[in-house]
Length: 295
Image 1 (cartoon, one colour):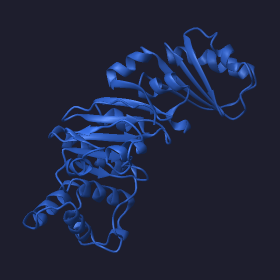
Image 2 (cartoon, one colour; image 1 turned 90 degrees about the horizontal axis):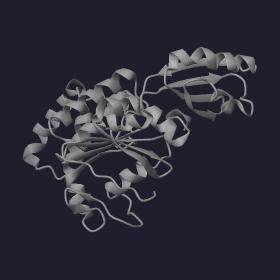
Image 3 (cartoon, helix red, strand yellow; image 1 turned 120 degrees about the horizontal axis):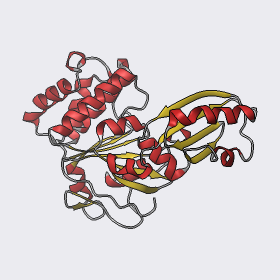
């Protein structure tokens, strides 16, 4: 990590967006007091992660990448165990667990063993566990990894509703579409640094009204192809990866035929093409020279 500086307002839904290895999980570990920073400090609702880690832990709920559940126990038994770990008063445990199981849509499966749950169901229980302590801040580290599209949609809708009810969220992901759906404020990370931060609208202004062309090739890209493609009218940026071209252009659909013609003339076989309107992935491409999925 390299000098990260972030501020998350109460009631905000804040996204940390970046490829695998960008430093998102390390940031979460420090904010959760699982990893001590080598320098600097962070505060959660006024409490220092360096000097007051127990006070910080009392204010947050953590949903880690790994499933923190016991497979041989039922959902209810897992929730009961974690309720005790969170010091939920005994008289409140049953009601709180029932409410959270209802929230994540698993009340009817509460007595089934966790190892019989699908990946998406386990993720939803993981989120319910993170909410047991009624946190001021819920930190979620890639909570949809390995789940099916239907479960992913259910998780995101639940989180959006919680945020609308006032819960502050810090959400990490390398899925641009998740952050665009859920988060009003976004920090883009790469190689341990925050390279851009702001509202989605503010970040999109960094690339203006440019579309992005994502071209996957079957053949290797020859030297000089990037400079040649920059001669195409409207093209402002060309990034080259392994069998990949990322191109920023003012009018993607108008520019695409000439780009494809230039590639054909150089004997380059194209496997797939995507044209995308301005989004957070465009910002990442322009700032880093990579696309989020490269990593």
